[in-house]
Image 1 (cartoon, rainbow, N blue to C red):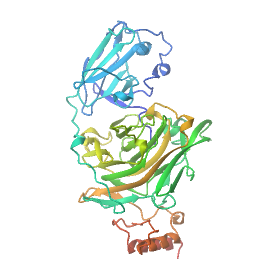
Image 2 (image 1 turned 90 degrees about the vertical axis):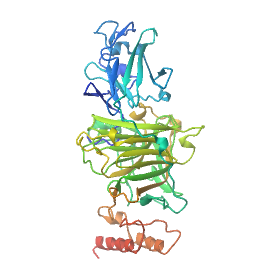
Image 3 (image 1 turned 135 degrees about the horizontal axis):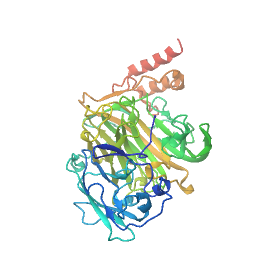
Image 4 (image 1 turned 45 degrees about the vertical axis):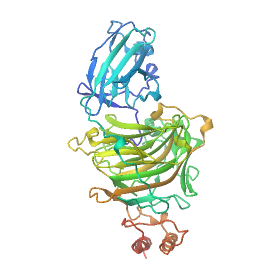
Length: 508
């Protein structure tokens, strides 16, 4: 299955040495979806642990425990008492229990760092960074509860983001940064989207299977090449979500409510190791899901997520002060894993109050996330792996990845919440995308074909030659450099290459 954004629909954890899969049900609605939904509903009178109550987290922080025996009766299913169960957690640094039931502000996000699994007897899984205490408590009788301890002695400590220096950005028109080589960028300074940099990914289904609607992730938008959904103006790229219902041949009875745009640099530009900066103004609103991210140019380790994914920035529109940075890795779906953190804007600031710079510094042994130059997360290579090459400590993040920008609606990332009609149209603006690589990093690579596959006339023509000539002679209106040989500058060799390619295609 070719899954581009099947996020958080199924998660996995390690428990008692076995890989247990978290169910696709949401914490707030799984009762109506599960096999025992019609069984007699009960309140909790007692709980006896079937595992633990002390359990160990593995090296990546994964752990959990099976459901306890309720009311002294092993035939009572969790689904029968779920409405009476409340879930709390705290760490050694916290004195008070924190409710994590549908409480995103707690920092516990269902299907991100905790959830259910349904294999065997079923239970709860957790992803922890430190020793954590979990309490299951009866809502009808709070004196009935069961406490668990998750030890995290094996969890490799992450580097402290506070110890990372603040990123320095280019100043004005000079894009140079000390210690970095600019290897690719798009300033969106022209009048249209550059075909040499981007292509549109279109449609509503991953493949011909009607069950892969919404990109296999229950999203509500389909993607188009329409200039109404994506365009360049005033030095910025705009991706726009519109109310344009449409059905598709895969399932004529299903309607996608919205149109939008997804731009990818696949086959045009990909890189391994370095730094990427997105300067973007991100929209908010319940059900709005903007994303700036990376996928592997070649699925060297297998289909998603065995070959990895790097999310530079994602946002749940209803939480306009929080953005997420995540990596996906492990086995092929559904045996995939992910790790990540979130950045919360402080002092009343929000991500939709203007343009912010979202960055990732991708190194061989760690990946770091930044907002406006401040590091908020560092994940070391000891925390990721690829199930198809577990002997390689750097897999899957040791291959070239390409760039993706899209504006989605609904989807599993925020439990299927749909936008209110008042939020549409919604738009994300991108001021620039810049990729740098550290000077002297012999293992950093990047590639960009001279031109896309034929026919070249769809991308380049005599007008491009004239524009490039004007650029080389300093015309201030010709602002589009063509570094076709990737030597870090636009020069006469690029002009010769461009002319040769066009003449070769026309058979002259």
